[in-house]
Amino acid sequence: MKAILPLVACVFFTHLTRAQHTTLTFAERLGYPKGARVVIVHVDDVGMSFDSNEGAINAMSKGIATSCSVMMPCPWVPAYVHYLKDHPQTDAGLHLTLTSEWDNYRWPPLSGKPAVPGLVDKEGAMWPEVEDVVAHASADEVETELRAQIERARQMGFEPTHMDSHMGTLFATPAFLQRYVKLAIEYHIPVMFPGGHNTLIAKEGDYSAAQLQALQPLAEQLWNAGLPVLDDIVSKTGWNLPEGTPETDTSLQQFKTRKYIETFAAIQPGITYLIMHCTQPSDIFKHISATGPERKGDMLAMMNPALKKYVEQQHIILVTWRELMERRRKYQPGN
Image (tube, rainbow, N blue to C red; front, side, top):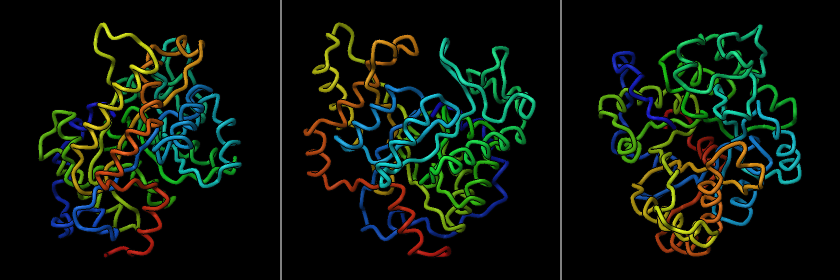
């Protein structure tokens, strides 16, 4: 998620009052033990390409990744949904998409230009940058496109376990954020939302305590609607190999595994959403993005027995959105 939370003005939410649960993490409010470190190991960008699908499948079926989200406007969505029908326990949600960031491989909004002209650039695709969406699109257009993505999934027989925001676009303005929360409650689908102590997300971006505190009333709104909420998010996992290191599968796996061990070590009690981009890059992927090695490293780290062993030794609890929602149903709104 890009460093755009500062755009959410604190004054927008300051009149709201947070419920008095400040001594409990959201993990504890879902019945996990006090001090438990509960982590969703999450793969973004599924459906974006064949290679992205393969990477996510490998990371989840052969590694420790527990969840993923699908970019519904992208061309390889049907293939992944077909996979889901054969693997119905897969924890898969929607990577709500309002941008098309690559130079030569692009996608338009599902709603079509007549319905959402502000989401379309001169090539007929979505804008490449979050700032472009903010400058050109209205909140109504954003909501129209989000509904189209949710409805396409359901039409395909894909019931998402959760929703999150590609490139963090839905956190770019208070109006966009309102629609995100509105649709989560209306469809009763959990969403990625940092509503707890936010220790690591604060370190990733230059967010003030006041800016993160301003999100907490919306987190309570989601909680009171019967949805789980996150205590923290880690999104900046795009580490590159040190300069001069040979780019081999072994070096990628070892380097990325070390970085993920460091990340797990820094995770605080509560529910943390750990975001990555796992890809099995073919020769084609380099024509989409130069991030193939970085994404392959994510996949290889997830599949590394050494990382699994570390997580087990540290008694870190790996979970899915499905499990969190089951617990939220048990611990009813108001609890």
